[in-house]
Length: 253
Image (tube, rainbow, N blue to C red; front, top):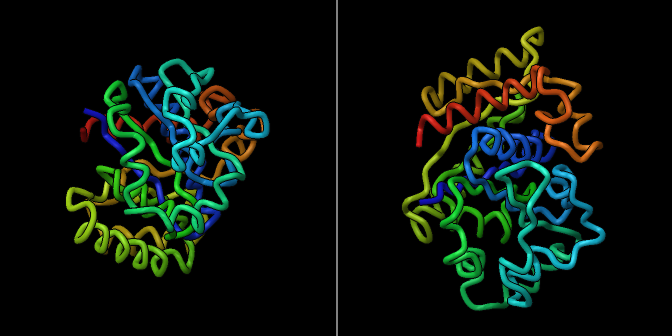
């Protein structure tokens, strides 16, 4: 049975897409069959694994509106064991157009029904909002992974996301749980980073991953080369941190 993990945080710039790309690649390197779903209209997860979103024959938008099926759109990436359901700018109109359809919050679940069984893990990169697309992700997911940058407003945003999750649990997906809170862009020389880390551990204890994603230049460079960081610089601290995260998740399953 596939484990479906939605990676979400309504705040932008917290390494959400970086986490989606590199966690998916790290699980694939562990020889798990992985599907990466890019549900962000910016298409950064798509380009981050080396796929040009400007030349796509279709995207997840076409899947949601029923124009194409999953086999039409699935792309095998250059990473063994890693497939991609791509996104592009067409998805921008989905928030308005698709909400007019019947049961719009379950559309993703309906169109993927029967197609996910070959995968050990499905990783969903959500847009930086709590709108329709993120709601669809939380409705289909088994768990929610929350990337959290160690800064002043981080906990306020986390509270809002957790309230949304509770609403989804009550009305749409009672099986949804927190996979974990992932501290990202962490610099242990920064007092504020350490203070926020301490506060997160105090409030959420065992829901915080042991793996911490450091502030690391290779993580910023790898997407411009269309590669997960493991294939750009396997020895970098960023690559090793995501390998450690994948190991934690595999051990939890």
